[in-house]
Length: 354
Image (cartoon, rainbow, N blue to C red; front, side, top):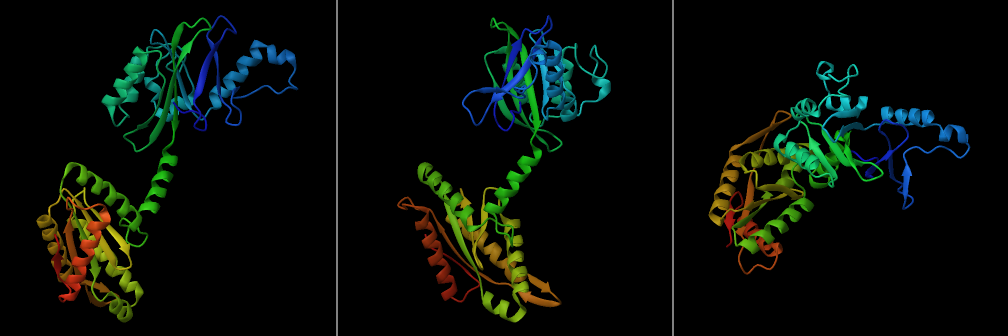
């Protein structure tokens, strides 16, 4: 399925001989018209340009050197052609390629090939259902991503082969390994959403998620709670033990906090020694209990850094979504007020404001 540079390919049938021949073309991104993948230069002799043998060799060179795996199946479900890259991308064992040509599947039914491919796909039911849908509906094209069990991601594009008279001849499938691209995208998302020191969610991502959860709670009137957290006397820790020790204190807090949270809850570093917990579908009572467990765990823990034992205490303010709240900022302000109350009442404690 992989279009070149993200541009969907189109397949045409050219009557160059008695056999089925085809060439691949794609939209030129700099011009609003279709252009061949490889064009014969104007200086090329007219003899070569019109020579079927030359055109066949050119098409073969393009076909075999394409970075995409290409598979062509005719209307009867027989494999008409595939290139070497298709075998490489799907890691097909040579012993399972039992076509009329050695070490290929050409001339064989596509069912055994499909069964082998299916074993490598993570979501097999969806993959198989879509393949059958495409075969049953020749008018459909396809462009999607496929996750494999080995961790790779393939991009797939499929389109129909038709004669000049519009007769359905079969279907062509393009596959491209985009695993590196997906890994790079995931790394960029990680950088954009997470704090580089602690690895937890950053302020920007917290507010993004908080606004989404607020809208959901407002719409469905479901519980939503927020906790604001501040490390007590963090400046004194930095001054006494050094900033490297302070960094380790923050990492320790994050590690302990994450161990208590459910998958749906979000722990984030808002700035400096300030943190927050977003708790969808959690009542005030549930949020208070979680905050108290976190406070006790951190108070009982001791961080050893460069042979020095460092204590850790936190103050926490808890609140919940109220029907009269106009925005997530209303919840956050109450959580901050509850945190200030915890500080004023001696620190190392949890306070709640409903």
